[in-house]
Image (cartoon, rainbow, N blue to C red; front, side, top):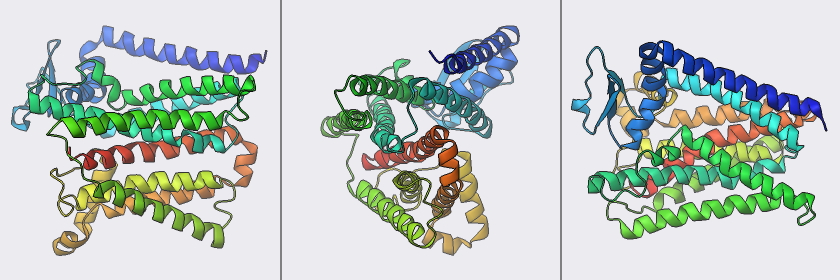
Length: 379
């Protein structure tokens, strides 16, 4: 047995447990500061509000109430108010947890002796799409809750929290890990040549199930619509942009794509889907006949929109919109990532490189798919 790999996993688990104990101890010793004003206000409270399809959740004296109207979202000095979505504090916190989680996943991949093959990235793309559509099932559930005053909910609180960000990342990870373990068993018992092939099929099956659930909702619930122009435009434009950029880089700046190969195309496509979905939802929803006006939930996107509005005159913004710089930023970041992940880096740290590529594709494709799917069913 390779004890170095085992020790790395144990060290990660020990660190995670120590962090949870510190957070739990702080919540017990200073609940008003650590739990109410930090954990609940920035992390769990937004999940609770989202799970009730509310404008806010207010915690006071250990009791929590949710409100569906913005005018009711006022809190006294002793109460803590949380709104669905993200803040700078929560995004920094999730970034730190995400980096730590990546180290844990890296330890697990080393323990399983997988993750150096770039085909692993492509094999997980269906699972990333599944995550976005699974999150949209919760959005559809919220629409049903609002329309029926909670009587027709598909999934009730607190179970629906497993489908809300960031908890859904854990849910999808567990589903993916189960598939990886099973597919590895198939490979190592000579049932398949490579575990990546059944893993891609496993992800595709999960994706198909989520699509069937959403299609059922479209058929049986009047508050859920269907606007096929959204996925056609989103996937069509994103694919054209990603393929075009990858082809141009491969032809005229090949050093950028040499280290990642087709995995680099997945990186570009994931970021393009997220960027195009934001542009369509933010600037062209009414032009496409969508019944909902979408606003960005991430601070970074809101900042880019605010800067665009400040730079360009109002009459220009009315024509070109404010969300398109987000697409340009996403694509620029993707190109920089491909440039950094050169042949030398991928050869020296193949497993770490593949894991980072997976994470980069996921943070684009997951939210982008969700934004696209929400607009597709008009919620």
